[in-house]
Length: 339
Ligand SMILES: N[C@@H](CCC(=O)N[C@@H](CS)C(=O)NCC(=O)O)C(=O)O
Image (tube, rainbow, N blue to C red; front, side, top):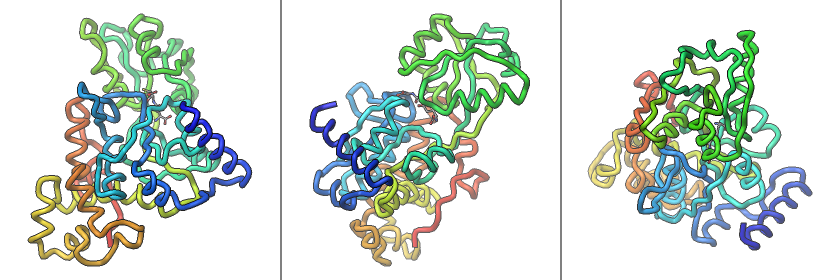
């Protein structure tokens, strides 16, 4: 951390603890606008959710939430500063004000909502804890892991869900935890553990980065619910709504058939009142959150709809849409209406 970000962190921590609750001195939207960039906490890097490509450009489903918030706030999806955070660092960075939002595959749980002074905004991916083993392993299902050594990352929900699953089934295991994903990967490749556990998408992402000399497979079970959601500090409903609705704009756009390539033409020609409201021609919805009338149009034109983001980021890893389909296709993605 630089000394200026350290002092921001200390000030944020003081206001957080002195007031006993996360109250913003000024609306965060004003602070972000004056700064000219959204600071977005992402993971230290795993494919599909947040990872810089060979040109150093961040890509991923979480990255797209950061960009959507920048598009809504500034009309420019590029006005984002990505702050890579480990699992252990992430919530403190948000509480202290080092980042304006966290889009970092964080599971929305009761304890995190109740104890950390954070607001989870909207689930952007429904995931679950899974296990990965070397292909030649005799382990066929999670129940065969009785007595196994299992690698996991520190500061995550993962081992809690795994512990519950093992207790429920009268099984035992020995956890080995690592703060960084790279040391966990190295230990797993080196044969330190019989299995590695994480959210299933993270295992697929990690697998795509492992040497192809050895093959790995996921076990069939998903042993917990991991609804992954961006989060903001509590106490600023306007900012929470901007983050939440920037994402829901992407989901609503998919449902309405608005995509990155087509949205501008549809804005000009569609007689549909929903489209007219969405693109800011009627309804004056932007003003309610301190945003430009075209905020949702900008999100879709610059970042794409949820389906486009999913396709771009997760299909290459072999992740199926599954329960993350739109509700009308039998999935769980259901965004409240923009009106
Ligand atoms: N969804 C779980 C797990 C999140 C998590 O941090 N997973 C690790 C395991 S791969 C990760 O993303 N590591 C990447 C990093 O530390 O940057 C949680 O919120 O606790």
